[in-house]
Image (cartoon, rainbow, N blue to C red; front, side, top):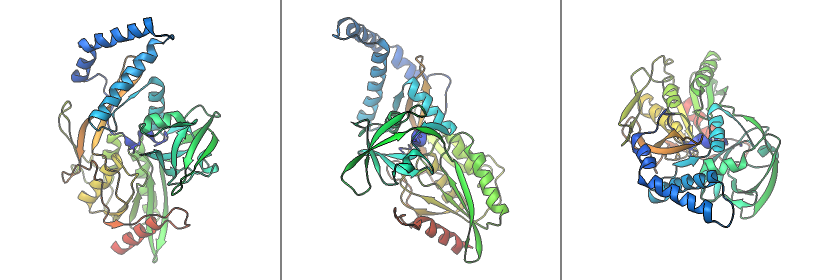
Length: 388
């Protein structure tokens, strides 16, 4: 089944993450783990091990302590994205970044009651079970996932290929939760899909990018070049349900469309300093471009959308994006897990922080689930044809 949450259901759990992989822990964080409070944690661990009425593994206590620290950040600072990743969760998280995982085949976003389904992969266990866009996964094995981060919630759904999982599904607009038993399968995330569409006698390119996993920019460039070779005289770039991923992939993707040196995004961080990310060069010749977004468009997908709108004059069609204005960094721990910490804010080329606000499209339109037509895509193609 990874920045929005984000937020793919690695499932795209990595959809709500933008950042890098530092080799060492930042000094401020290192200080937290070596000061006197570390001794207090060790003292409490020893007391529990010696006195609790049941036998408790030290590793479980350490995991609980780290999870508690991350939850404290989320509560005290209203930070929805910092979290502790156990070794098992980290392994699955990195699988999502690499574009494959074992699950039920959904792209999701965090919702009040659990995980809202943003996309169902064709041929997946979820599609065969009748789960649809707009449904909400509210429970796993009979336990509520409300309030959990996307990464933790999706970890409860994922598992070895061939194993089974029961999820509680609240259908869009409904009130009754139905229990669905599914057999997990190996899911290869379809990062990019493309085709040429004819409108009014003109050929228009359509490219959908699902996530900013490793190498995504290369697949995106190939798809754009393919539709151009097939005669497309403009492009609809579909970033709906794209929860984001790697910051470097967003910059490289923007470099396909923007001249070298064009500002893609800037960041500000108390511990890492400020940074300015520019297009790398090698951009393709300019063509009319429309970007299609929705509430599941987050993180790196918002960065790309804003860069194309601000610097290439791309028209934005669809629904307001998620609104993630902060980025995280994965910091490895000695137990094989990691802390995914919010370390700064990012800003669009015109200096806007999207946190809580998102990108409001130039043309607002919502696709209506259950209809044969994709109303939002039709409107995006019409907007592109009007620019020709």
